[in-house]
Amino acid sequence: MGPSNLLTLLNSLPPYWEPIKKMFYKRVGDPNTSQGRKQLKQQSPLFHAENIDDPVLVIQGANDPRVKKQESDQIVVAGREKGLDMSYLVAPNEGHGFRQQDNRLVVAVAIEKFLAEQLGGRYQKAVDPEIEERWNELKVDIDSVAMPDTSFVSQGAGFPHVNGSILTSFTASYEQLLETQGREINMDVTRNVLESKYKGNDVWLVINKAQSPQGTSVDSFYLAATDLAPLKHIVNQPRVRIETQYNENSVTGSMQMGGREREINVDVSEKLLGSIDVTAMGMSLATDYQAQFSMFNLLRQQAEKRILSINGTQTVTVPAGEFECLVVEIDKEDGTEKQTLYVTKKEPHLLIKSTSQLPAMMGGGTATTKLVETDLEL
Image (cartoon, rainbow, N blue to C red; front, top):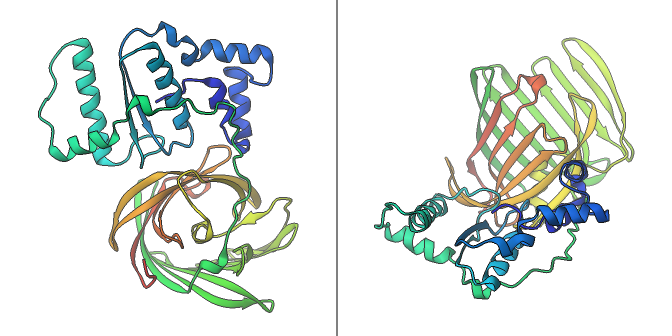
């Protein structure tokens, strides 16, 4: 379902999507001005529902963080009050775009039948019993749909609350595939999360050891025990060593590459996160969760904003088995990089699979990581 009411669509965008909001305001209409609100109403299907005469099929992912369910509810209620023939399907485990195979098959069957009935023509009447059962589960009684509170303003969410106390020591191994510039590079990654000390304080030490044809790389991150705030980061790769300390208002350290050493001293005004797939283990993730934060980019030597949202759930199969996962999408604020984490629904949210866009300065491409085994009880 697309937006039915542009006013509520813009009203529900998280505040950290400010650049996107400004683009919408310029291209579509500014809800902060009377002229803009008038324009948005004129362009919204909801305010022209009286002109709809034909039957309508509405399909919605309940967990859609972009075009929220309230957009579908509004047009369904408007059509019902006009006496239109309305059909409504809501998938409780989908977000912006359907991912689950059974739901996608239901959508295909429902659309085929709907178009055949309205436009004439053939459609396949015989439906697999499992698909028909799922179809019935997604159907919504339109009389049960209530008009949502259109005065809602998203709180978006700011910096995430992270609870480091729910972590426990564990080991996990992953297989990783890098696809870049027409090449495929396979790597074996072992992750150890250990209780340790840093400057006399309790910390979690996250050690990632990667074995590839180019050699062995070790990435070590010291995270505060209470909130998993980054404290120290050490990267050891063939011919490369980077060490950074996270201070209150700066990131300092050094970078050694190809026999040359370079000082790192960057002022940082915002609060930072590090080792995001481990830090996410301490977040209270749910289908409506959203957050914003910044991470320090070692290559660019700067803090960069990230937007985190949950895009429903998905059954994921990896070498370690089959898991029901939350789909965690992490986007760079300017939209140039994206990372998707598939983590266990149960806390702590262990990483099961991830896909990441590689930055252009690394040659571009993608990285896919899959869990092979772990001693963490799942």
